[in-house]
Length: 549
Image (cartoon, rainbow, N blue to C red; front, top):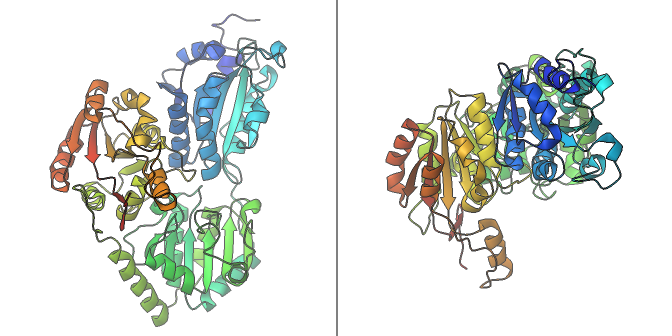
């Protein structure tokens, strides 16, 4: 054994390995099961910042959001048992959203495994279905294990990796060698695949580019834009991936989410070739697997994904390929010739006009129109501003009316995790301190995460919008449809959100009419961090839909 302050303990090598992988920020809720690691972090605080959080779910959401923003794993550190289980929701989000993430979790002493010791969990059994790997720290192989965690998290379809840290090994002498930063493999399309996809795009009458998934970078997205322009294709984005393509571009017509606009509906019906880039063609994007049939997919769909298991998972395809999305799109952008087609041009222009018509505010019965709120928000914010949200009907208004101009500016969980927005926004504010970060949350969504409102107070570039309609809106809507006149367990008795904000160190505002919002928004953005409560009518449940019960 070595002393706790020695520089070659397992704990110190773990911290050095994090630095070698480029980690500059670690999100944590302290626990006794990794005290030695905390001690090692003291020696690294000049280059590795520890963000102390109030709840493991928020800390883990911050790590997941960091992975979305940077393309490299965000790292969260939690204590064993309850701490790990609190953080599990973010592991599920990372798995569903294909986000690289590493979670370090304390573990009982090696000699106590299997004895039902205090806070014992079998991490492989508990987390095996949502993590790409569950690794155990070994003092003899620390550098290798940490590098492997990062490599597995990024490789193929990105996702979460869990590393357990048995408390008895952290102070053991360890090999101080750490591995250099790992990188994603950049697999390419074959020449035959490039040629065949080029032929199909050239011969199609009305091609569609469907862009989604994760792992994108600036070069890949620039190539997508060139490819779309060369082929005069209609462009749609996958669920909660609107920031992958400029929404103002004349060829962008909307998002495939829980609902689709008439423009997207027409595009999916009329386009004779779909080039799907990254999206998995899953449940939400295909409307519960109903927006596409097997007969259509086998003739229309060309699917490129990062992992072979995603290609043709639900629908057979005309052509499937596994490749790095950025490499593949650059290959295609270079290979596909620019061609003018009056038919394609008219088709795209008509769909764009139809898309723009859906940005007009729908009638409401209340005093605060969320469509107008988000219109003012997108006009006021710089294009690089980041907007975050969790889950709930309030998000449908945001995704319909807020347009994204560049990447990365959208943090939204495809997993549908409530409470996500606050942690994600804190991570974004820390990663990009020169950008405005707006967190949008419903009253139920926000209170699931509000323990870290005090953490948000350290970020002057944060603005929180709390949409307060006094109900769990999504469930109330489904109740009204299936059991009209019988609401149950969906009314919320909320705290004073303005007072909460002020108590945590933020400026607080309340908006009860649309006309008040613009002036309040300007005040909030000029003097952040701030929170604006938007008091909405529960009957304004979705754009164009009034709740009767």
